[in-house]
Length: 119
Image 1 (cartoon, rainbow, N blue to C red):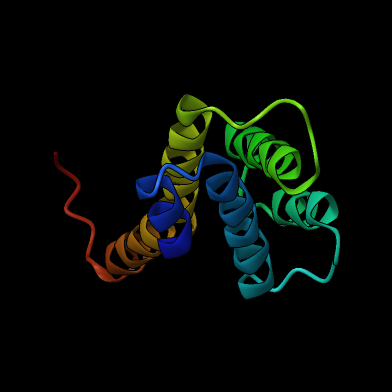
Image 2: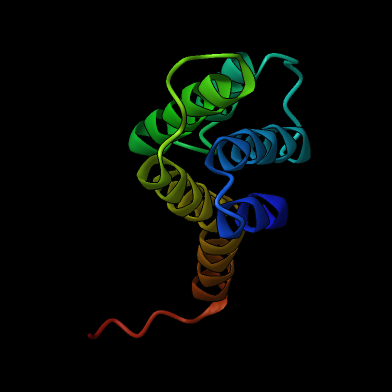
């Protein structure tokens, strides 16, 4: 993700998209997916309930944009698409690594707390 941000800062928007895609691949490996192809690995994350609905759609859209950047095309990756890719990837990473951990901590704490019966 750091390289994706550096590419964006250098106005290398196609490279930004490729590095975002690489970030998704790393996230899938880190989350223990067994599939090699990114499409299938993201599906595995969805099927294991690590990502859902819109997050899965976002991840697939980032994968497609990364493919556009990685393979020769007459359509360059725009600044706007690269910026959106960074923001969506950041949201996805926050969900996987930050918000999920916070929710699990909350659930553990609430499970240990004695019920008060009042709001």
